[in-house]
Length: 334
Image (cartoon, rainbow, N blue to C red):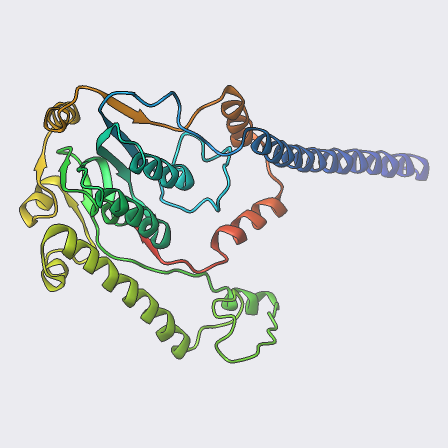
């Protein structure tokens, strides 16, 4: 091959490489712009529509309210979210219970739970709000659908009785905290996280710094205290001692039959049967289902967000945001 042909070959390869690089760069920029647009649109629409509110007017006659606790129990920080629409909305539930307390036409609540649990703090906040409702003297009937574990079961302790679907998994009494430590990986990659701290135990849980035995004991004590609170709530709700609760459930999930035998629920039946029964006992035939107001705009942007590509940077940022803080979890983490 002569020099002229070699030169043209090099030029051709350079053009191909440059074209490929430009294509990749354009695709990355497009992904980033798409995600930025969705983020801006979510903020704009959330501001325009505000937080979720109940759909439809409340009955003007005596009624039983159906309140659903579905999905992972989490605090959404006092603001509505596009992604919260159609799943668990903590602020909406708290506000709904408050509204029911003030509504004289409401004669009771049917608490419908289908949840694996979630954040201990959020679950306890909802439990306490339900206890405020219970203090009015109105009954709380509770039904477990397919799942009512850990924090989901915790919330149910405000109810007067619990019935469950025969295929339900429930109970799962316990809490945990989890953190990622990448110090071993950082060492292999030659990365060092340098921390300037006011004291030895400040900044526990930084991803690149190994845990000391003392720090592990500190967080174990937090878990132990939260677990003791969980035991107290269940003991009070089910008329048992804490020792008896601990003896019956060591953190495992139970079937509906196992839970009934242990005294953690009161019966097993189909939902339709239970609904008719509690309506009869409440002395009304009006069931008002409290749900967040939905909008086609919310549905559209939920769909767009679910299919939009994200850059590696955005994925890492999301991961760090979700796992970068230590939270006590009352959750069925399988």
